Length: 476
Image 1 (cartoon, rainbow, N blue to C red):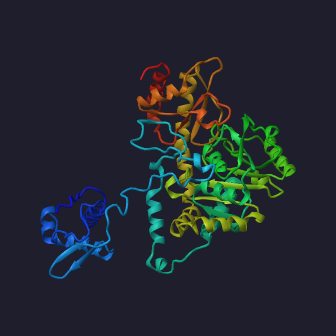
Image 2 (cartoon, rainbow, N blue to C red; image 1 turned 90 degrees about the horizontal axis):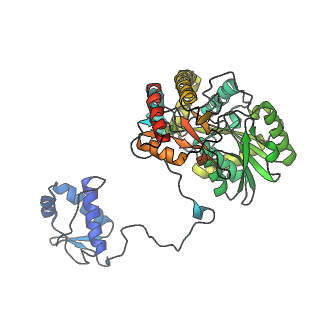
């Protein structure tokens, strides 16, 4: 017999031989009662050691697919009929997800090589990450004694990290909180998921900004909410346009995403008053607020809230790196037990070693130093990008004023006609990655470009925009 074993594919040699033999059994190429090749012969044919083949045979024997007979050899076990297990996952449609999950697909994420001129949005520069410091802090937490004593931790997160976050936000953002108010999450997206689980039932109305942050809209929709986009102007979300039955309002007041404008003080006061009158909850996502390039930001809604209606959400994905999956939420006392229970049901608890290391990074002052250093670099990129857009694209685009974050938005000028989707695609062929503003609009399309500067060095911005200019001219 010849099982036609291929040594291609992942895993060690023994695992690949095991899979090849198992496939031959399940496909009927090796039938019940049929003798497998002697281990010595198969090893010689595959040019591997006999011990490697023996390991594969032992695994098949232990799982009952073959049986060894002393002095006779190894045979396919009785009852192993061909086709007893498919080689791929079942493809039938008998089981379907419930609405609205039946229409959900993962959002696209970056694959393949990065663009030569990457104006992608929402990603910090990995070269700025304090890798040596982080490696030292994380290694310090990975001690044998800590592993031996490890158990299931507090679902709210490492106590030291919760205290460090409370102190840090109190100084940097005037957030009113102590360690008990903080719940550590796997990024801001998990924070939003926990809030939706605890506060929303299918059919509840949720108001989001338009244009706004697509992952938040998708998450609330998946929770069964009726999501309504509310227009945003230069002062922030239009409070007068909020649906009166909204159970939850999601906003990015410090740095509106994607436009970049901060919510005015008057609009913040109006939003808090509206929530109090209508019994609604405000989710304040402090998006990109760490990197500011002007005066101290306005007070967060959380620090102005006097009725316990604001849940404050943040993340270290932009400040440090998305790979850390470190975020947090700060909720009114009445919500904390439910949110902790939801976190425990979701994933029990986070990574205690990484959380302890992050606490030390914050308390040592290293995070603040990193933010100051990165802010200087991002400020130079922002200035270069703003100047070039205002000089070279003034006939086509107007930059939306912004004082924080890692991206700029530029609206298409009135009267200018341009297929911005085509511009984006032509730019990509020229090695330039940009995004269009309509990608952040679900109900009212708006025309413009969104350009990030987290990934592109300042010296490459000029060349990148020259290629973008060619894309506007229809050349690629």
